[in-house]
Image (cartoon, rainbow, N blue to C red):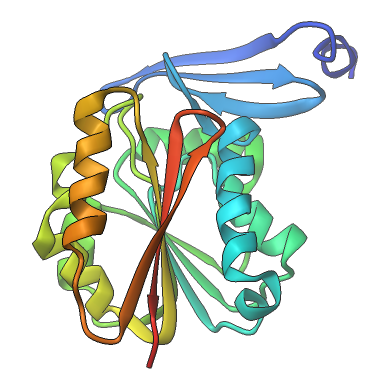
Length: 221
């Protein structure tokens, strides 16, 4: 409790671990809340939770609450899961895919993800998972980072086509991206400008928390 109170004045690190996939993972008390960070960016809670919450608000809390099945590619500490349950009161099925088993162990310890009955965590590569899954989803959240870097496959036409295929009618994709340089700006511009799929729309929510851009894809029918 003392550390939590002191965290309103300065961050207090309580856990740090090296991870082969995610490099450094830290748990810190900051402004009264536990957050998960990598070496150079926030992984869960903190700014990331605000970013994804804004995207969910853009889709519509009332609309999400009525959904049946949500897929999250990139779980980390699970802050978006907490938003879905605590703020939106989503009661349907949540499937979370995370490649780093160590992160899930930490998330279970500090954020109690394993106490959420409607959540199924799958330790797998996101690309492999979307190729294998036979399910369809009302909402797919893509939030995959290795520190500040995003794997190239996320922006390939094949991957985008595949997650669009997995959407139910009137479903949504919420894609969190980070823009730190001109190359990454051009990468996002190319994805959005070249996206031409019948019965789908695409839009961006730029400069969220300065360096993030949210891309929202909607399946119209």
